[in-house]
Image 1 (cartoon, rainbow, N blue to C red):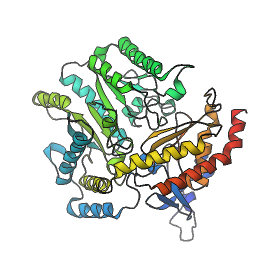
Image 2: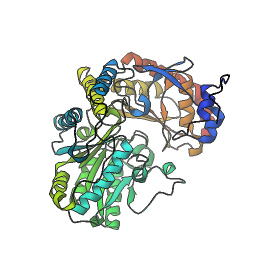
Image 3: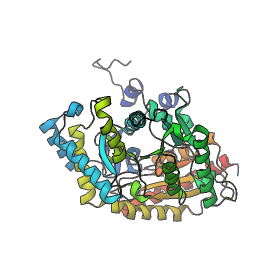
Image 4: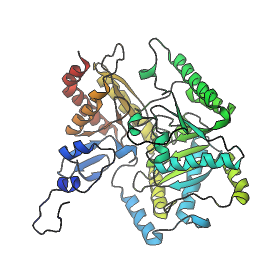
Length: 473
């Protein structure tokens, strides 16, 4: 440990970081060798690192800074909330005005903009991970209260990301998040990843691919027994997996299978919620009828750690009916429904509505997607550019004609993201397949998008020879 109290010590921030911080999702060996990249300030869609280098942020942090950085309205709302009621809890019927009003507003947005009138109550946490842990428990609670205690298994999908707490990590279907952790098994099962570009068989149409996905789901249910399966969890668009958009008709058919077998649907909208896809919620974009919706990120635009599980009327009725027999709901967190977080969320939603950021996401997202497709159309190692709203992925391929992927160990997407950052553009290399994502603030302008397109096209030109060497061409 560094002796930071010594008057003549002159340690750099990088040295202090390496000697004091344990970073999440970070290679320790690489970090100790190369050190951190430290951000200093941010405004709008622009970052400045602590050495003064400007960066155009097309990552939105971790898909989360939906209204952009440095909003004074949110700072004022937080200040006033802290002065008024800096903390109160929700245990034992305790409540506060900000959280009551936020809950009513969330339900109203689902009812008015997503056709989800059946959603009835909101339960709060602090992260998407703990919200999905809550959902994991609610599935079990629901099964017990309704007298079907064996109906608790959950189906997830390969490539899914649902968080990294104990239960949420089980729900996540990306192998790298399981390696060396010895997570419990036997409660979560994975069906096929619905990514046509990468996982379709040679000559297989999108319709035939969808048929195969549904057949795989049906076979899994038959193998495990529908009487043992409580829920199916899905991101409407798979984010961390690679911005994977479902094939046409997929969710309608999944919903029919779930309804037939009395299986709950959990829609994980941690990324897709609050305008990211150009709709308020992807529940509405894909006409889903979820029993639980997971929210976080865009709920406060990451100005406060806050998440929510929005549950359906049919689940609420079971919970309410079982209350007298089973007693209080013995689940919750110290910071569930934090009044400062609720006030920040309300200010965040005010900005989104006042500035029309959902519509801007749809319009500007289409502009960014079209621009990237045009500039990268002839690049030999860009396979597919896809997206909805301001949720866009660029997938790399070693051979465009055959869609042959690069070797996983080549990490070409990390090479691209690193070079882009060197060039002044922040994009994210994702952990499942070779994809970089664009998810800028919903306040991004078309001029910003033009700059991002130029920077990324330049980056791809810079790395073409390295990609060629890795592709063996």
